Length: 516
Ligand code: ME8
Image (cartoon, rainbow, N blue to C red; front, top):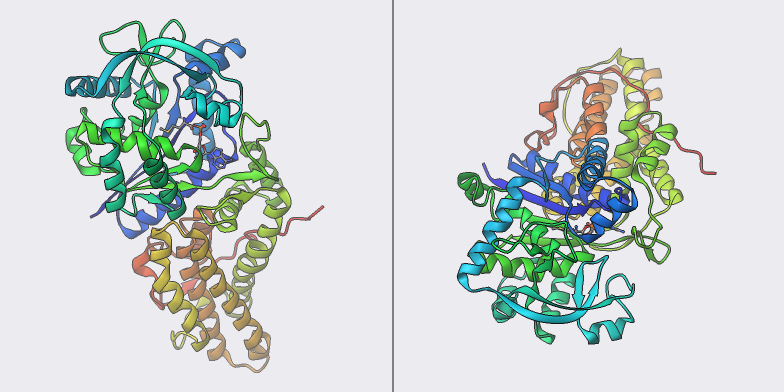
């Protein structure tokens, strides 16, 4: 059995989750479910990033004790993952004792190796981003290059990690591992950054008098560890680095770190160098997805244009009649609307249009009318005379079967869905062309049995392909077809794998939503 280890970023707990966070976890969940369908032993990690000054300030602004505050907000993320049906295996918080121990161990290893040193420092500092910037960077951007807010000048003694020592090695690593960062645009962006700039050593401590909420620096109580240095280490601490050596050997290196493109440099420059210095293997791929925007603006806490995912699920639940359909519709929208590497534009109208056209009209209608006919004409028992595949299905089904695994493995979820929905279109057309009511009138019962079997068998195959994207819907279809969950496996995707059906029609999966 192959192992598959995938991660999401650890989200800051200074505010509640928004749909940008939901997006990353939906992508990762789709991949995790797909890999489990392939039979892999999956370890899917997500969690929260809880240290640093901005978290402390948020707790103070809320007049809450910091520990109570981080517990509450972290639980809010966890609640969202439960609602969105995110099947993570482990939820890490950077305030976990085991993680804190790992951070301290890592620092000691790097200190012993001579890769950490202490020095005086003067630089521009952005408090909300917890990042230092050079004068040129600040001048070029007119403030913090990330969030555009004002920066402070800070002079202090700190600990530094020798990034610069590994610059040449990292450039070579990129050149020899062209799939290390995906998509290609992001790979090119990092490589060109590394080739055009001289890496400065990374300041990895903050004096406690300025930043008190963090992992204490080993053997120096006056400092805490820089939040990013602390947070990145989660990917190895969760997998058991120094605590569960056997498990670590089994799951590390990670197969994919899913991140947004905003945190590419931390993951594609700092993180590989930290691992190299530790003598730990590098992750296979860092996949940086695009941003969801409203108009031209990235959706973000600092821009104040967030869409609350709990409210969105609740509105969709009202429109669709149940939460399972609402969650699957949202997951479908995010995965179908844009390719993973590109930016998307979010609006309620785009969401509703997508649901009405693909899920209500095409998929929902196909399932409902097929099961309706099965009950009306054959009293729910579909036993074909011949289980041969209709010739009209052949091309599409072969295309789907041959491309699905590659598309899904490469995070091309939208393309996989294109193939699936083309096949749905083919079956819907087959119904119109065959005119079952005429078969019935002309008493062609054997043909009717074969025809309905073809529809139901086609729907079964569709239900297993959509599983990673819409798990509730997939299982609901399987239930209506009277088959058990074991049929949701890629081994069962061949035609006529199930020979007969006893069906039980449920409610329409996706009613149409009125567009106001
Ligand atoms: O950066 N569109 O946490 P964070 C798409 N704690 N994805 C978005 C998004 C948007 N508009 N907005 C946010 C941090 N995201 C650090 C990470 S990891 C060791 C530490 C998603 O709460 C996307 O995945 O700011 C992005 O990278 C992440 O949320 C940033 O979350």
